[in-house]
Amino acid sequence: MTAFALMLILEGLMPFLGPQAWRSTFRRLIEFSDGQLRFIGLSSMLIGLLLIALMRG
Image (cartoon, rainbow, N blue to C red; front, top):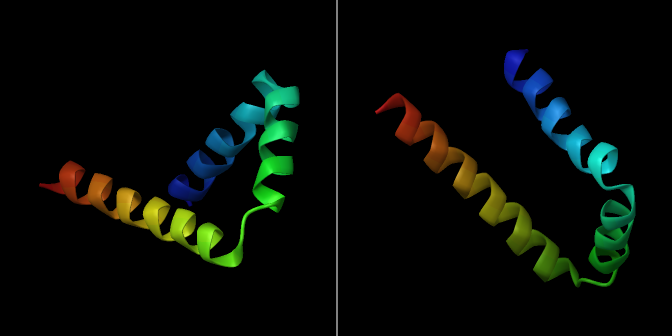
């Protein structure tokens, strides 16, 4: 539950601090192909797993 709450806080920072930049980023993301979006998702998951492994080790 703590991890979920932290994710919500981090996800909310960008629209709160820079709504124009956040909107612009999403406009660009819409133009990505499915493969590009999958690569971004996979990269994000792997970085998260690496960070968890480093924090536990």
